[in-house]
Length: 268
View 1 (cartoon, rainbow, N blue to C red):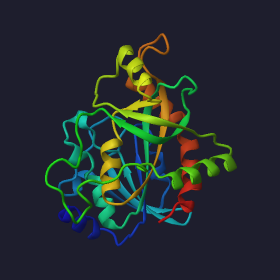
View 2: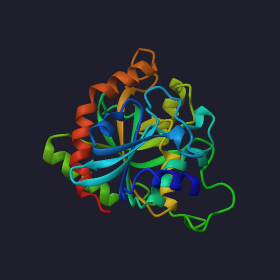
View 3: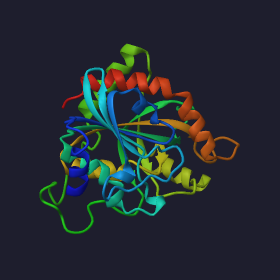
């Protein structure tokens, strides 16, 4: 981590207090920053390189709406063969750079029948079904406590700000529970029925390792899912990643407008 920090600081003197992590097909926000410095993950020591389609794979530091931000345009997933600690590496580096609040975005399958394709949903809580945790192994006391509390993993304060902001600018936001699966195969209809029974509204393959690591470091988290498809068995059609990317492109401008309105209001 120290090598990554030194490499980044050799390229920029930015000191962002807010971070943004962009999911599949949702990377347009990074292109909107002013005064941006863009660093490919491959140029940062130890940083896992994004191999998933729809993930640019770069750290972008710049300004938007008067806020200095650090943006991860793309993330590492467990299904790419990375460990949970590697999937959370970027978030840990952001914390060391001084980031105190992170907005996560992801593409998710809709389980809740009240959602429609293209809806934006604030994650209120999660169910970790990935079978692992980025905090496994010896605890690094310089990062956080051995047993971090997760009762407010998705900051209620930040969600209230997001809901109010969405209402003011005409972007409706729902709230829901996100179930994290390991992937890369999409879920079966039987798995979706199970997830609905245990209380999940959304399903995806990311975000949870990052949010656990962020909470471990005392970083506030806000997470926004784009419902890019309805989950298996809900509609009489097959699911494919092209649909995920197409829906992400369709809501791109709405998400960028929402982020630009929310970021100046977040605590930092």
